[in-house]
Amino acid sequence: MRYPLAATIGIAAALVLSGLAQAEVSVQGDVRISFGDNDQRVIREYYEKQSAGPDREEPRGGKGKGHGKGKKKLPPGLAKQGKLPPGIRKQIERGAILSPDVEKEAQPLPRELEARLAPLPSSDQVRVTIGADILILDKQTKKVVDVMRDVAQLTHDISK
Image (tube, rainbow, N blue to C red; front, side):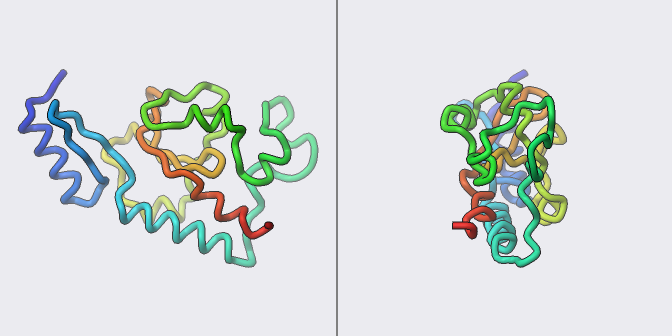
C-alpha cells in the first residue's frame, strides 16, 4: 500500500522532529530510516569508554576450544579482532538481506547502550552488532536498514 506523498512527508517530519531517527524522503515518497547524529555520537562514546575501561568484558566468542560446539564460528584470528571475513562483510550493506550464516553472528546491543538510544520507529526493527559493525535490522525480513562500520572495533583496538 502506497501512502500519498503528503502523508509520507508528514511521517518523516514527525520522526525527525521527535528525534526518533534520521529520515530522508525521496520524490517518490519513500522514507529511509538511519542512525541519527545523536545515536551515532552515543554509540561511539559508549565503545570508546569500553575500550578505555579496565574492566573490559571478554569478546563475545568466549574462551578456549570447544566453545559453541556444533555452531559454525569465525576463524580464530578474525574472531579475536572482532572482524568478519571480507566476503561476509561485503554482504552487510544497506538494503541487503542477511544470509542465515551471517544472521547467526548478530548480537543485540548491550542493554545499557540500547537504553541511551532513541527508540526505533518500528518494533520490527532492532539494533545489533555483527563483528565490528552496528546495524539497524528488520527482524521480519532480515533486511539491513542502516550500518555503522567499525564502531565496535574500538573495543578491540587497545590490544594492538
